[in-house]
Figure (cartoon, rainbow, N blue to C red):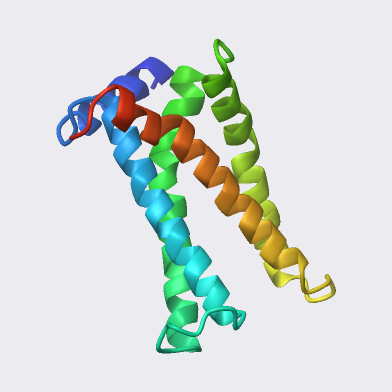
Length: 156
């Protein structure tokens, strides 16, 4: 199957729910950023930085793991469209910033997952990797979905 065929089928599937592929990307990116906020909150609770969450332990750890897994899976269609259809672009500062941040996103994600299992690293490395990943997601959301909702349209 050619890339054009895959792209057309993806577009047909997306437009059955959303008004356009770009609208789908904006809403999926918004879901990812919400899950990233859950990630940051639960991570802060697991590390003892927040006390307002009622539970500390396996429940918070489970929410943290599943929100991260969900964010990763939800981000894949957005990634697919950005890489295969739009590609790396730099016509203006917003799009250049978005392209550069997007280039680093999955590398930082992979580094964070590898850091997670390495017990020999200093304790500050994992929170820095998580904060870097959350920051990149924030930059990507601000330069894409937020821009779309405020400049193009708000809705499905």
